[in-house]
Amino acid sequence: AARQKINEEFKNNQNETSEEKINELLKIASDVEVILRTSVIQAVHTDSDKILLVPRKDLLQDNTPYLDKPTKK
Image 1 (cartoon, one colour):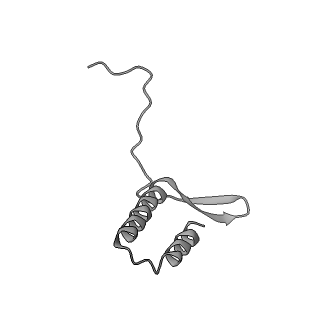
Image 2 (cartoon, helix red, strand yellow):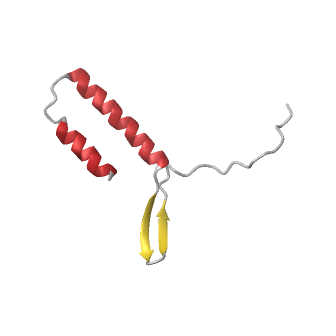
């Protein structure tokens, strides 16, 4: 769905000649790329009742332990 929307937006703006508008559109595209890379995970149906998650490196983060009490300084 995301790829279709991206292609649609590029087609809608392919004749844009304003450098300012083009830079604005490229900035939006870059921001969307960051959001998709860090927030969306891909999944593949492997069986009728199983899904394989395929996280990208950008999505993985260090495991931070939960602390009930703040650390003293």
